[in-house]
View 1 (tube, rainbow, N blue to C red):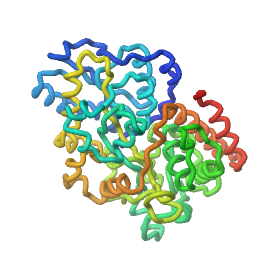
View 2 (cartoon, helix red, strand yellow):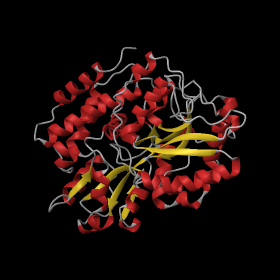
View 3 (cartoon, one colour):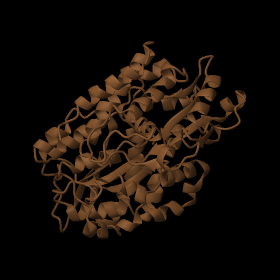
Length: 438
């Protein structure tokens, strides 16, 4: 996902947002009545290799929308490192954009603030109906059983990117399908200044995404069926240890990756410093860094069983971006038109091609661009072996607490400290203590 995703640590806590009985948005710049809106303010997430890249992608489409509707869209591309804090501040103050992008893992947390427009049947009808969207993408739009807090915009999945030349030089014929195979390949590929696998050890959100997949592969979860935190079970402890051990014990990740948090692992892969990369829809990002698409292959993320599918075959979280509306906007009619435009079949093809993501709109997936070998891996993963992160109100705190625990474990591994089961459990118990009371 282009330059995804700097850690959103949430210094403005969600508990503050809840306590403030958030009343929603309202355009910070004004912009006409609901019947005849003239402007909309839009916060876009940083999907491309830079903010400037996003502006170049989005502005022609926003101009197209203005020509069709007479509504000017004032866009601000917000870096991932700032986005969650900006949204929570807007939710508590009532001063924010009309329309905004949110990370789909935040949907339930932001839903709990009451600031976002619920997408009930009536609102979905304004944009062509709920049935237009892929079920997996809809599963990451809010708490199950409640009206979604947002609409899917871009869908992504994790995949294993591997350097074809480096694999050939090492005599490795196929990409690894299991973690044992990945470790064996990574050891062959490490040495003489190169490493088998890249990681973002200081990137809180990336850490959580991988931890959740590893936990699912161990038959575990970080929350009970009732939504209560359960961070330090035997399964989650084993999962986190396996992940951090890729650096600490298996020695296939460079110790310096413990400090990576701003997509440096993508750059290392593009420059041939690492042979493998676990990343979300990375093709556009790699291209922007000068890597020829023919230089790498794309395969499913390894699993313990070697057979992606349900249960322990989970090999990705359902990644993606949702489009939300602050419900107190004075441009509700215009906001609905904009959401309809951005999720139209044609715009879905244009935007998802630009970001090497997968359209969450079913009809748009028929475009041949989404059936190339690399995008087919992502599309198949989303359809068969990806799961949504927990859709609970405290999800953003979960990301911060557990992601930070993993960051600390990677720092310990880089410093040469032994990563024991007891050490992992202690970090997870500490993380659970940081969660807000129900």
